[in-house]
Length: 373
Figure (cartoon, rainbow, N blue to C red):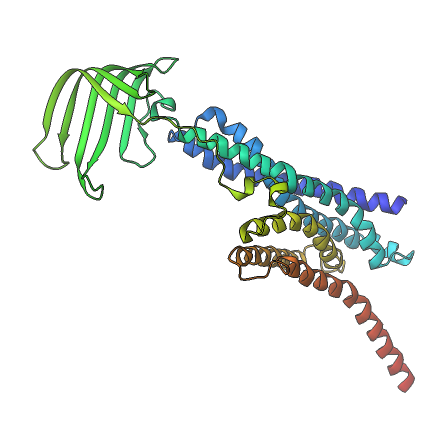
């Protein structure tokens, strides 16, 4: 029991450290992406941390199996390097028993991954999709930042305001540049530039929004040509797109797991099998990691780390490829993704029993050589 607690603690501590580093790296990259969208006015900066919080379960369900895999490799590799595993082997610790001991922390991780993949992650995706739908419904003035030129989503309009009231209803020092296209929308016909001293937003009874500009000019023309037309105005109204908040979630990743069960659609079945595969992935990578962690103290603990990571990447890549094939109906649903797990479980068993068999054959050859001599 003491050895079991010691090994479990080593694996869980290393797992926590590795998972924390991977989570910071992945979330930093995704946060920078959302931050860039907020800087362009595509997202409200106030929802960035909400989005990252809802995306956290989706990140963890993929990070934890990899963290456990690397945790076993690093923890047991250190024990082999310090000859602690040699001492344990001399007291009767076999590879099979080591696998059984490793399955205890793997069970904890698998239960956590199952909770994330079957419950929390779909809910998080649904919340993120709802937030993004609400952001899509905002006009450019709902995310406008004073003192910054801001492009609309399609890049056809650039807006600038020098000042903006707290309720975003009053603007001052306004500049708007917009491309003009033909009626077919396939040919650019020039640009329109609006400048105004002030402006305000007005909402009509039917929900239509107008930007009412005061004391300004409108310029129409083509860049590089001297055919601009200038119009001075006292009041000018610009119709803004009417916001429509959509509550419908179209992503299958946001569908509750209960709704996937019994659905014969290949896309829904592949999503269900993917969610079930993640907890199963934990046990298979444990079976792979234990024999791969066995290193010679003279070779160093990182000798097998790169081949092990390549094997894990091959496992995950083949699982993703099988998911895509299942989406398109190229793989029977009964076969699904399970054959990938079976293949790598067989590889893990082969790695587990290969070293004892090799040593047994070497000892037998040595005995035969002595007998012949």
